[in-house]
Image (cartoon, rainbow, N blue to C red; front, top):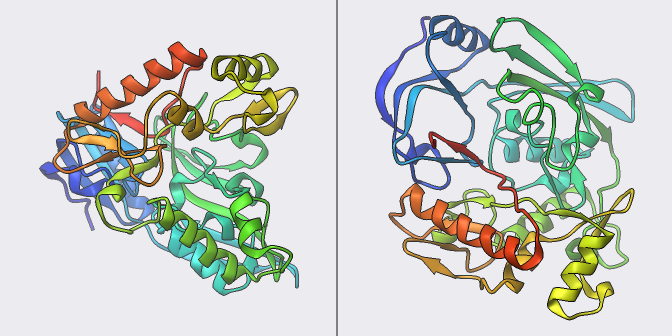
Length: 348
């Protein structure tokens, strides 16, 4: 069946921010042939590949090209032995539903990534991680389509170039590939990951099962307004808007000096080689931005200072203005450049 194109399709309803203009052309790909056809027929146009809409901020002007919505579905499970199961998921599978299916089959390795919005295909691009777990720990390979040549190939974990919230797909090879499927290696009957502080406090010395950890993670995310399909004004966001900055020892000392506190009191996660990840939310609050801070119809979540939100009827430019206000304050006070997580689409 031929791929169907629509004109002037509103994009705001297809994003978690709920803002943005129209796509000049729009199509939904339900299989790999649709994806290949879209790139063959639209070589003369800009093409934006849209997943779950949870990691994008689209401009008020919309997108002057083709927006290709990925809607491919399918899961396969292959038990290599009593301890290992390989799982391959189509890019259009809902991520949280994928995690629920794995946990339901008693497969360990993604339980702490429960409640995250978006699709499976987006997870390797930014090396999605939360509560002490990252997809790079379990991804075996990523099957991709080369946008320029039309060739389909398999990218191994080692060649994905995974780092904190990074991969070759949003780094050196950004916009070259479209993710088709992702394959994971999960542990049958494995123990859940209990490294994050909130999870340790929840379970104490008790050893929970995978389902208990999934439920706890979802409850923690709900308390911060970051649970997929939670509803309410705090949910009209892209989740964490800024990446946690990574600084060296000099950066830690500078933060402590600016805040006139002991360096040991600055929260950090040791990244190795003398580098430390500092919570962006902690820095934002100490730069004077409280939860619920408003700038027009855009604001900081009332539940989590790392989430920028559409408080109702906001335009993309209002969210950009709030983003830039926060970036400027952090830069001036701490000499740290914040990097946004969502992709900015349709801006100059």
